[in-house]
Image 1: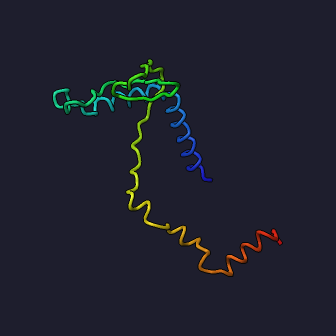
Image 2: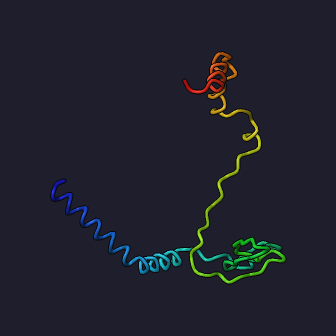
Image 3: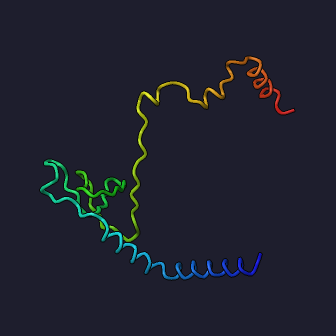
Amino acid sequence: MSIRGLIAVCLLIAVLGAGWHERARLQAWMRAATEQSLPQPASDATAPSGSAKAGPLRKCVKGGEVTYSNVECPAGAQVKALTGGTVTVVAAPPSPKPSEAASGPTALHKALDITRDDTLRDKIMQRQIEGPR
């Protein structure tokens, strides 16, 4: 490794170390920056009638099961205080349409289909019965 490469690696390690040391300050700065850039939620007047009012994050406990929601907890659930940490919300992946899920064998099933060749199936069965050679 050349001297320039060694110096670049050392500088990179120093920058990463300084960032790690100051991570709390960086997180607070990022949080403030994102809060300023987020759009304000719609007022209650624009919310559809009959819908639950969205609000701050709530921790709902019912029978040992914990759920987090921004709407009122379901009947019979207790609202508990949130204690530290962060909550990350991830969008659910789209569910497949029923016609796609039940449309038949997948490409993997077709590739592994040994019913077309009886000799191959017989060889596999014989190998399983006799064990490795």
